[in-house]
Image (cartoon, rainbow, N blue to C red; front, side):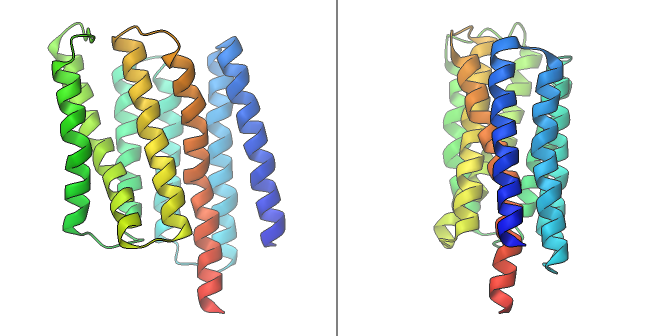
Length: 226
């Protein structure tokens, strides 16, 4: 079963990347919605795999909820930016909670998170390249930076505490997510060229890795039980 589920993951990854490229070229919301649906489907496939292999379901279920909110945020962002950002923020909170099931809360989590958040906040507030067209959007950007910084910080802290395949995957996925959002920020509020494409190039692989972590988690539990 492991081989078959892995092949399904790789096949869906190819579909996801094809939709990513199609969206970059065509730019329709329908394509974006389809791409987002694919990483949720990947998560569902891997959640079923974890269920069939009798893994502890707290991590995969909470990750699955995070993926659903990411999908909703991805779609709504094109319709209403603040609402989309809020949905993404809720998704990051669920990812953060899920990461705590891999490694318990530690003071290192806070240190890693602040190391990311403080420069991010200063960049948003002080960099002259940004035009938020009002204080509300700037506050939204700072609050969002706070949430995603703690999500990424927890992933990095987990990896520092325990070098495991799943921690490597969620760290890479989380960092790519952060960089993707940075490109989104630069594209929307600094009007820099090309960054919109870089955002999409980073974003969907990030979501795949987070969805794929459910497969790795289920397999890890099997290995531990043998």
